[in-house]
Length: 97
Image (cartoon, rainbow, N blue to C red; front, side):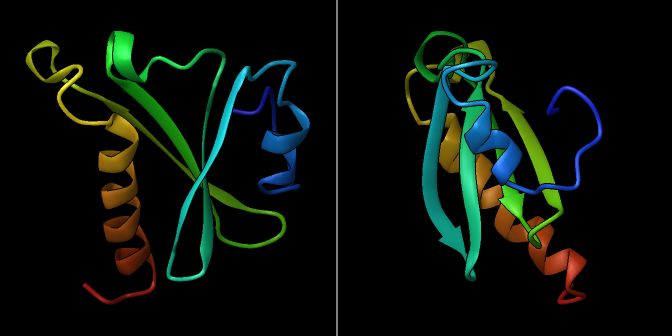
């Protein structure tokens, strides 16, 4: 995800902004966990792709990749859907489900 192993959490994403990642956009946090969408390009409207990283600590992230079906491209922001997935993933990780 970040060009190799890293223990720098979301810092690695932000440092790659304008370099490896031309698209870096903070999203609304999930239960105080920061969330950022990122990628080599912004492919939300053109391909229905979104990759997000949830900062679970200063050194760890959970990454979630979402790809919409061709019929849904342009109808809903895939990053909104990826955020919904992040909410469920964090609930599972914390043992809420």
